[in-house]
Length: 326
Image (tube, rainbow, N blue to C red):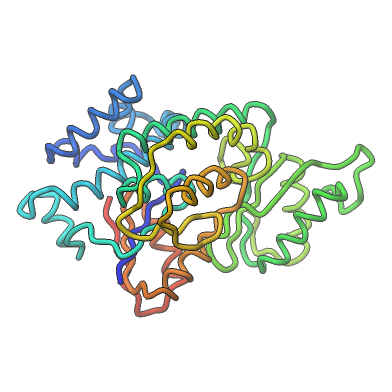
């Protein structure tokens, strides 16, 4: 069985989608449609913008969504003899024929759109609104994320809970000022790789304690804020109406959603999970394991970068086929 997976924020690069835009009429039309929907030429930023330009949340999220979905659309609809389909065939990807789909964080919107639960217009509109809502939430209070390598999930969860509840600070003592803030496990990427998220001081405090407990590395991430943490609640509130009004239909295959790592096809369940995703962790390792349990023996990543291919390789059986297209 074949699983198509879609990357999240951080996979962007200058020039993303440019080859598609220039070689396929369908891709050209979808990029131009995206420019119309957003009201500005995101394609220009994607093709020639600097790394700094692409790092802006309002750019990054819709850019990765557009690139990922256009790849899926071209696999499904472009002629087999087209240059793009020939390139895909060389990578062992003969079309868009998923038995299941999933996306990492933002990638969940790409997965839903590729699987027909959202139209391209609706999906891009939601992603753009999500990006602006998250950016605003980041500006309300300084916050950050850090990757923790080499520890069990439970150890990380317990330290985050301790720092949040007791105000344990960098030196291991308790804060007389009433705590360092909130920190939670936000992304379960693979075994031994968990991203924590929260207030700047709380993330630093948790990171110091986790190093003492044997973490191989604690790497601060260059992100705009504390994604998938309670600090994103203002974004959840702002996005609630847009998601509720969105037209979501039954997808062509199950979508394994971030919040519970389970397959979903019911539009109302999908809506509920999309909304709470903003303040809940991304259970990527659990998603891959559940897909494998449900029969997936081939994974195809569509979108910029190859991060998900690397994570799947760590989580799936050795004989699993892992491919990608960007």
